[in-house]
Length: 94
Image 1 (cartoon, helix red, strand yellow):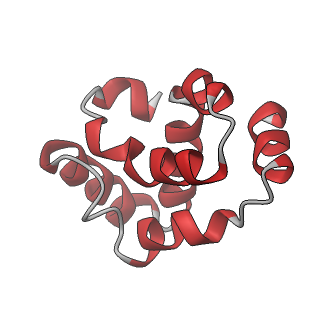
Image 2 (cartoon, helix red, strand yellow):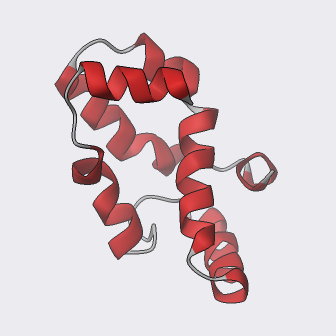
């Protein structure tokens, strides 16, 4: 989303600080268990591109909330934790 990208650039937030744990730990600490199992299933079947799709989906699903945050630290905290409440598996995958 260009708007999310603009927000991250405006707040000078290095996105890798927030998302590196998503990719290095394969979302294990971020997603609820049922969602995590589905992501791992897709990851094992399709490969690493699934991880990028999940990250993109999380940003897209949370776009409105992300755009409403105007503080660097609040945005960092929100992005770090936004996956924890993702239980709508169909919405995440489609």
